[in-house]
Image 1 (spheres, helix red, strand yellow):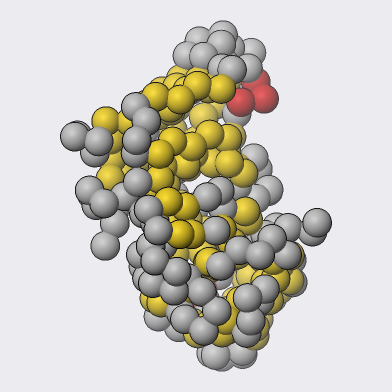
Image 2 (cartoon, chains in turn red, green):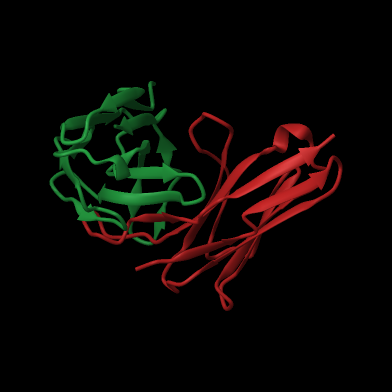
Amino acid sequence: GENVEQHPSTLSVQEGDSAVIKCTYSDSASNYFPWYKQELGKRPQLIIDIRSNVGEKKDQRIAVTLNKTAKHFSLHITETQPEDSAVYFCAASKGGKHGGSQGNLIFGKGTKLSVKP
Amino acid sequence: NAGVTQTPKFQVLKTGQSMTLQCAQDMNHNSMYWYRQDPGMGLRLIYYSASEGTTDKGEVPNGYNVSRLNKREFSLRLESAAPSQTSVYFCASLLTGVRMNTEAFFGQGTRLTVV
């Protein structure tokens, strides 16, 4: 089955700096790669995602890149702010036929990002 | 739209007791999932259901059972709780299809303590 590795496990940056979190996946059939942000005591929420037919996607200060050949994808946060402090999870999944067993969603272990004012 | 509703929010069990965590979604999603979250371990998949009437084991299924009651509801049962099952449990749902999936929405979580 799919295995997702995420690095680093903790990341501390100064406000205004950039932060990069990297993930690798094992199943070459995976085609959907979301990133979730989880604030303390809350549920994970999607911040950005990318599909395998795209190499890069950007949404304001957040961008994700995908290298299908190397099977890795990364989250880039620019001009970090204290409210960016949270745990970030990457995930990988692949589409499956309706009723099939291929539609699972596997997460990395998370990165705790701390942004110091 | 309520999204994904998960109950209860908190629960304390004694070792050996049983309980069922309930999850319901109103987004007409076909796939539903149960994860557990432990410090430093991320979100680990317990069971998932790709459609009504089907369930599959995830990474850590031992000690759990699930029921996909209908398209809306997916329950997780602990038959004989153990301290190792102390965790935060999340239910999630998303739309899955051939070649692509959509955003997963999570319930609010259940903080379970087994003493």
